[in-house]
Amino acid sequence: MVNIDTIQKNYPLHWLIWNNNYVELEEELSTKLHNIEKLDNRGRTPLMLAVTLGHIESVGVLLQHEANVNTENTQGWTVVQEAVGTGNPELIQMVLAHRDYQRYCNRVAGIPELLHKLKQAPDFYVEMKWEFTSWVPLASRICPSDTYKVYKQGSNVRIDTTLLGFDHTKWQRGNRSYVFKGQMMEQQ
Image (cartoon, rainbow, N blue to C red; front, side, top):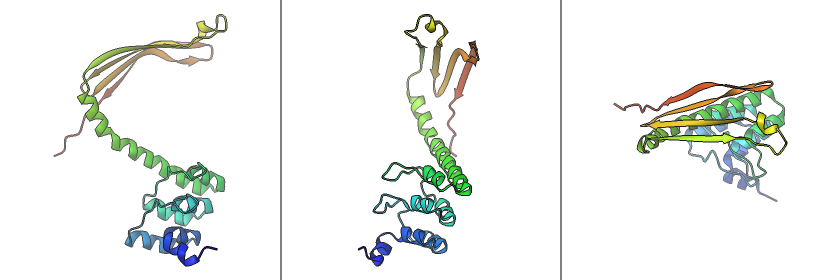
């Protein structure tokens, strides 16, 4: 049998969440240094436990303190999947909103490094041809194909394509260019 004092000592955030003591949870996270991503003996972060239990108030506190929404438990379930499992629309919406926000922040954070690497890479032009084929007679005639032309200069990239989409019965063709102007912001 596990001692309650041991659980409280080893997993203080999990303990507060288990009891849905979100007021004290807020105080703990605001005043003391805690590992908000610490796994319990079942492989759950505090956020995963709060979502699994359906404790919206505790989830809100953890999300305000930037708990990672993109984690999985030891069974491979994500926080979003656990939220859906509760059937609570408010909880699902809260988790999805923070997941999308965290994903956006992670993507934006990588842009300066990407632009730096693009600028360092030598300029180039390349053509990439791709096509789908089929072993079914005459089916290959309706399969899509295209040639992408990629131009890179500095941190700018241009991609030209002629395949625009599919309109119920045939592939739509035309000329389309995508231009990415990679400009690094100067720090002052």
